[in-house]
Image (cartoon, rainbow, N blue to C red; front, side, top):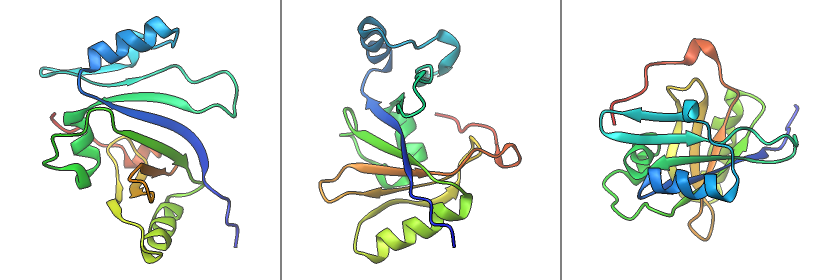
Length: 152
């Protein structure tokens, strides 16, 4: 059985003021085009930097605290999310998300978000490392698993 290890591919920062965070990272020199900022009637909720040119580099995403509570049910009701970081790992297949999540939970690590089919088309789950850092596990995106984004 192929057990390709997860690959670090994303750092996601939960922001208390997404517009201020976008301005900060742009001033730092990170390319975050307006087309990669998702806004709803209630404001900005997600921004993705342009993928780095180096294939071994991780991408940067920024999310509002309100949106983070949607994709991580373990954070529902929390008011202390600003500044939280999610370290994202890509896995080879949808089933790997469930398998790795189960192995980590079985080893005694806390699960924040059980595996589920996320609206953006990936299978996704989150576990916590021993220091409380959220670690996301994400499969490749599949067009047939995409759905409408939730209201935030």
